[in-house]
Image (cartoon, rainbow, N blue to C red; front, side, top):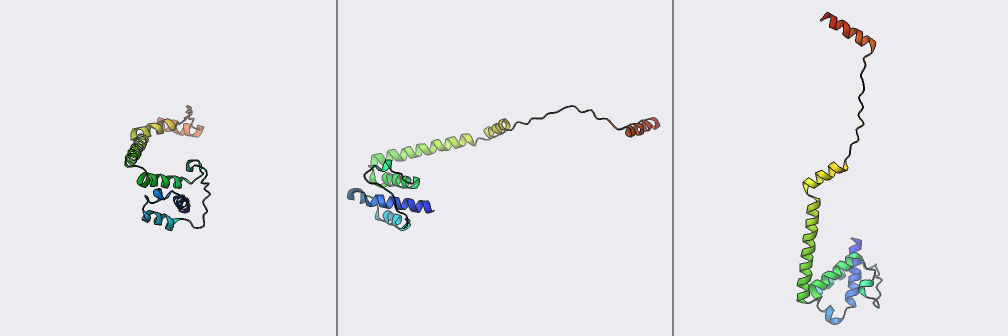
Length: 142
């Protein structure tokens, strides 16, 4: 949870450095939510002389920024393109997971992974002398 709050701190800092035109595209309620959930003790280390893409940002920060861009800043055409790409990526990921979870493949993999090395040798069982004598007498009596 701490990581997401730090990400909100970085996002809040970046949003406050946006051009007014871009800043106004983001709903006030969204900005307030980020402000309320940010880590007030965390100081983002962002150098605004360098591109955001070259900054060392948290993964969650990048995710939130991409959502802000997609939902509020980019054009309608670009938004639809990004949503389509997200859907295709999700389908691709689901297909990959479905292939991995195929029942037949799981059992095949198990059969391949588990190799039992049975070193079977024929061992000749020999009864001790007393057992042999007792068995011999039993046969004679029957």
